[in-house]
Length: 205
Ligand SMILES: [Zn+2]
Ligand SMILES: [Zn+2]
Ligand SMILES: [Zn+2]
Image (cartoon, rainbow, N blue to C red; front, side):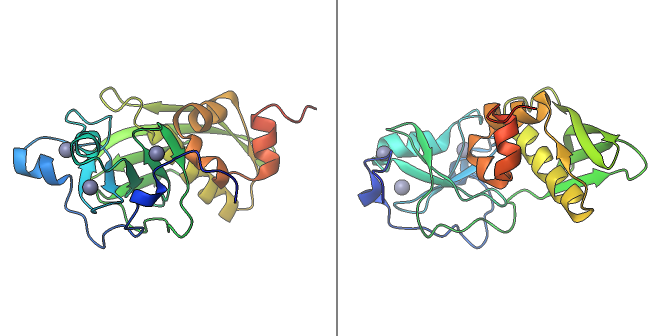
């Protein structure tokens, strides 16, 4: 193995996410809102992400000196160290099967949009255009109040699943690259290497 970008791997005691998550434990106690959930990999406490007003995961990491969390969001398996400020993967960590807050997607087959809902709230949409047999993602937009929360990446991931099932290739666009590279670097592994190469400009026509 190569050197880890995080020097706190010895603090990790728990790999698996909880079977059920009600939400951020501190937010539930305080009556505050959260956005995404993280689990402390030392003691298992579930807290809210840095996009959440209270940033309970970060507060716990500092106060308890438990630096490493993992995502407990649907399909995610990445870890983050609050001290080294790095996203990385820990061997043996499995993706979460179910989202703490149910995510749903509304795909209008005749239209050109995939909408995303978290719980009963619409958070954004992705627009696409057929180009021959392929699909070009032309735009993703996240509603006000949900900016920068990574939902662009989740919409793109859903589009990959939908069109992969239909055996329609996706044409990486600037918007696609923006969603993956800017907001969700941890999702790079979800993209086929050839597509990733084009997105990152490693292959030219
Ligand atoms: Zn670290
Ligand atoms: Zn919280
Ligand atoms: Zn902890």
